[in-house]
Length: 581
Image (cartoon, rainbow, N blue to C red; front, side):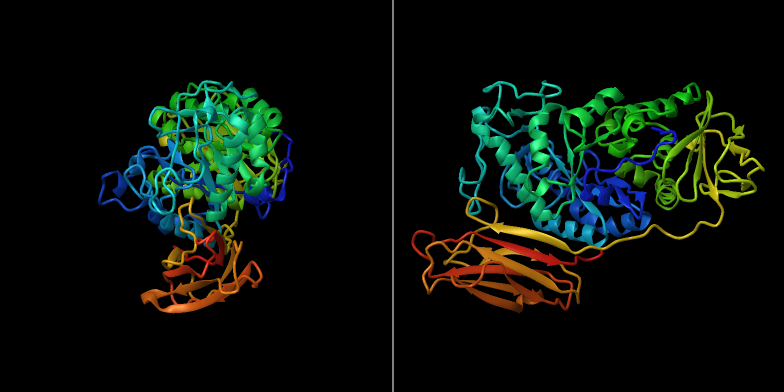
């Protein structure tokens, strides 16, 4: 966990740096869900759709200092609306096809998902997709996967799969960290016939990334995936350069470090399960844990620049939750690494976590130096910026008074920004006497820095660019002579311009062939329209300024298309500023 006299490692690309650091300080991630969130699609008619609920909370997330949100899997699962997302079925259904008994996911429809994504970007939050790449579920027992197309025709949807795309029909892939696969049909990313399933997953993840304007990924069950293929995947297409964190669930910090540094050549981060296990023990052992063990602990102690720290997640909270977890959050939110807050904990202990996020964003920075360690106390100083002195006490019965050295200098007036301790003044040699309260309900911690630090974490706001692709084998219909096709509906911020870039396949078009693109606003009123002919330049733009919050719907229709291609595919790239919530 703690580095002594060591600073941040330079991250491999600007995109990773943008997510992990803002204004020179580490970002804070939120896991924006928990297991079995209630849903109308799962039989709870009174529950809000999760995508809408999250959208309503994004402004508060951003105001607290959170910088990115890991959202649950966005693909239709084998159990339809009951699926929590870890049984993926169709790689091109994000809540838009009537499959597995439902159109929406447990969390909502594609439209609700994309609206939430626009809200996230408007609030300056990075979108972290949960990618389940190890397996597929929902076949009829024959390792054959067939999907609906945009017209609802069975077996005509994109990215069908067959037995020779999976193990055990083909040999195991090379360099799979853990070969056991008990979660579904085990994908043969490398050895599948012709490598088609590996390429197909690259293409489909690119499609989802474009549709949501995502900034990064969480890789589910990374142990089951060939590092040869996963490296190729993360360096391909839209995935290249984006943030990625692997769920490499292992209690051995050396094994995690070897995976990131050797297997993945530093291309991804990893969750720090070893540190999480130590913090669980510290929080549950009633003062018998040896706090010295936190010195340079976990994967973070080996490679903080690639570590994502956490206290609980959707799996651990069900299987082996951390008790008295405020102490654990005090550790991860003041230490190096990129901390991730669990939604259930945010809900249940909001004021505690909000305070620690403020300390993370406003004070904690730079290298770490150990200042004190004994059976009950671990104390360290972040030496960047204004400096931060953190004391952790695991003893539930006794407060602990220590006198650590510090880098604040002589006669510095220090304030505990958690409110757990009184103001103190450093001695002539820079040392200071502090008292860390007993660890009742996890509150055995203090966070001292120079007095007078005020303000709020800086916020950002971004436009979003979402790409909608229409084709017969996808989930949005291509242009059609027989009907006006609804492409998408957006909810832009009033008064902020919307730009749409339209490209299409004009193969075999005559001089009479044309496509008409139209935008309607509230009440169906036409806001703007444009006609495209074969001679028009590809990627021509259309722009308007919304007067109200929407909805605004894009429609397309083709006319006089050639016999060989009556329904031209297209791509619509829409850039706009979403609403605040």
